[in-house]
Image (cartoon, rainbow, N blue to C red; front, side, top):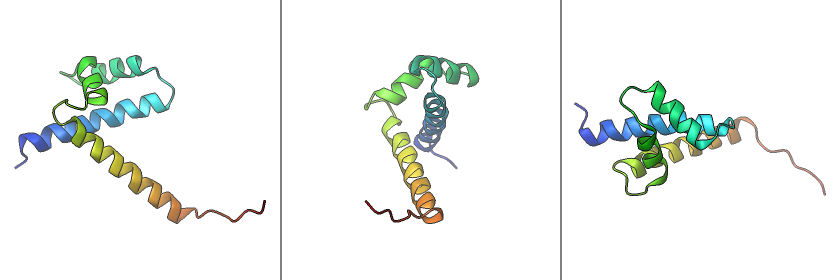
Length: 89
């Protein structure tokens, strides 16, 4: 059975993934928070902003750890798939 901390950490990580996807596509951060809130029942744009920007938000830092780990793993996978080519200067 999942603990409350695990549930909220996973939820916050999923909300961050959605928010980051939108912001990386060029959507304004406030608009992205509104879109994520609208697409997730019971979620407000204030909650999204709290998770994204407040280091003391409950389970926010843990969610960011998950996001950073996923990004590092994706970068490592990309390095293995497409190694750099040597260039001369």
